[in-house]
Image 1 (tube, rainbow, N blue to C red):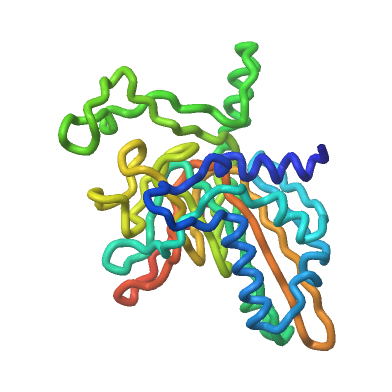
Image 2 (image 1 turned 180 degrees about the vertical axis):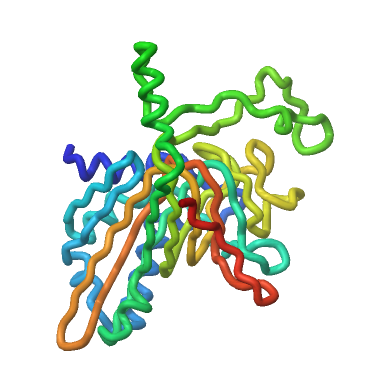
Length: 299
């Protein structure tokens, strides 16, 4: 297995068990089907040959362990290795009262984009991804490795969190069934590494809410009844749809982009994933009452 394929498979490891609850007979589209349908729809709208883009070389950038690695692979190969074959929600998520969606915890996120048009408009319309690494916050993996080395204990880049904090201990009749606190296990983890500020916009994104592999608190609406927000171990789990992400935290992130230019015309596609992450995110960010909320850069 090539190092590229290992990175791609690792990047979606947190999404492999992602599934929505099958409460009716209507078949829910899988994640690959959702993204394939998006690419086919956009290709038809722009009147372009999708296979041309799938065969184009894509530059893949991988972040998360303190280094930035780059690879070049056919764009179609990247897509085949990216999306887990699991069910995906079709609901468009937004925060309560039309506000952006806020999420915190372990965030699994998949995204892709396709655009075609005048080359002069490509900068504004092709996939836009920014990854900024903090220069002041210490790399937690480096610190843990130093401490582990001194003690003779190897430190993995991902650390499971097995006990829930006190405020998540079930309260009978309040948020969850009666579960003995001793058996209350929170499926959460911490990815050790540099702190990053990631922003991106794209045609289609899907992210985890609730509890799957890892746990996410999210204000995505509608939440699983009767809860006002998605809560770990309480309100179930699903995927929600988005069009942009603003994330601060630690995690494994990669993005791939392919672009073809000819005679003033550009065809571009992009894809990426944020997985094994811990931090906070704003999805579908937009001004509310003229004020734009955004996560600040950490120096």
